[in-house]
Length: 352
Image 1 (cartoon, rainbow, N blue to C red):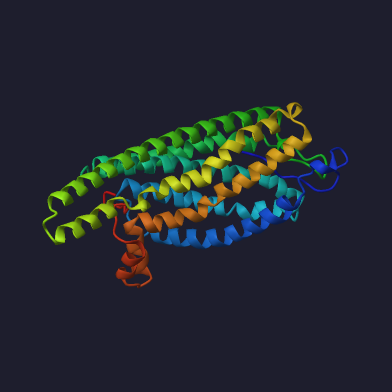
Image 2: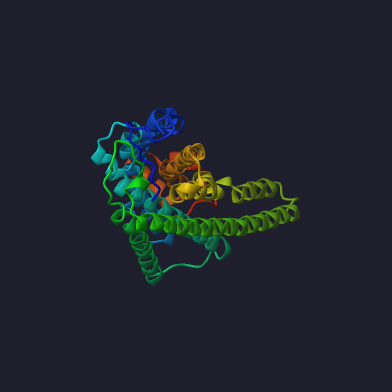
């Protein structure tokens, strides 16, 4: 969706101080993305190996499986970005990055954002109505919803591939140079649609975790009041204090933390950068360069999502931990000691 590929070479038509071929683009980012690729491939391979041995018997598991697939696809776009940004790729490979690889990167990012929103709704529902169960019809609807999300975003992104069909005319080009006039217009439209997707899901995550926080606080105060009433019981206070701490376990908010760390900074930087690419006469060279560097730095935070997600699976999904430890023939007691038993756990048998 966003194009950032450039070719070294003939810079005579631009101010040399505005060239994107600086240390950040050609050295720093390729190094950190290389490391991210190695870690991401390892963690997501384990996550996929475990998750697809777990039946899809809860909404939470269905959503997480979709995120695993999105993260795997995103991770495999990193090598193309490394080769392109470090100026080690051929002309054909850089064109491929513009037409396909970058589109897949952003496609999977917004799929993850949508499923983060759905997970937040699911966790909120389980907090507010913990005894509501599920059935095969509800699970089928969630699977249809998941397929619809993938289909809708693929249809939205496909014109970005089709309309990025111009051939480079020199050794120096940006991805936007390969887009037709219709492609530039569609690129801008898609970016604003993606902004709506993001801000809508940001609002969803914020509201859901506000409700979760309020419910957990009410539970905490009820527990403390019960503890006070049972104060004459020597064992009661210790038992209830432990319960109160468990209900306020910070693991509950890991989804929100990852969402804010990975996705919020990039979206503050994305709109002005997109405008600088599609409304070329309104931005001078230096401003374009600064917006590009800001966008790329924030984009790396979004890429971290592919590495942080497997940690979420481990800490928040009891089924994932259990299957992982059984597969590795490790004692389940080790799993409990690493994560603790808390209301943050979510799987087919646990509400929160």
